[in-house]
Length: 68
View 1 (tube, rainbow, N blue to C red):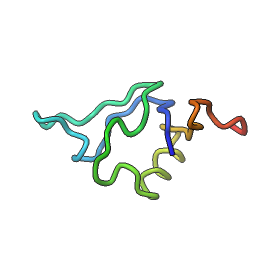
View 2 (view 1 turned 180 degrees about the vertical axis):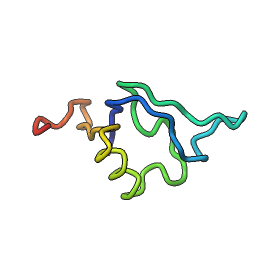
View 3 (view 1 turned 45 degrees about the horizontal axis):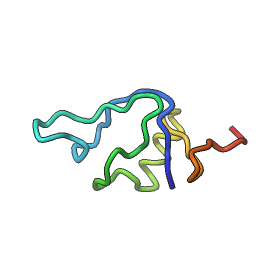
View 4 (view 1 turned 120 degrees about the vertical axis):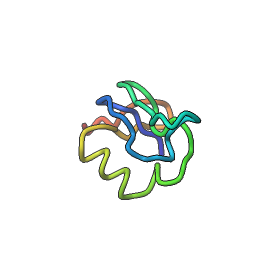
């Protein structure tokens, strides 16, 4: 599954941090996750981000679900 960021946020997951320890910032229109890292796509994390209005599932061709 692919997700698109619909509301900017800083990822609270320490595994998203760069080599300086700075956590990744997602901007509207970004793809989530920007890289594969532990905890990024657990059911709980995806539910937290979708229910919070931060990400939306997109089709493989990049379209968002028409139900939304």
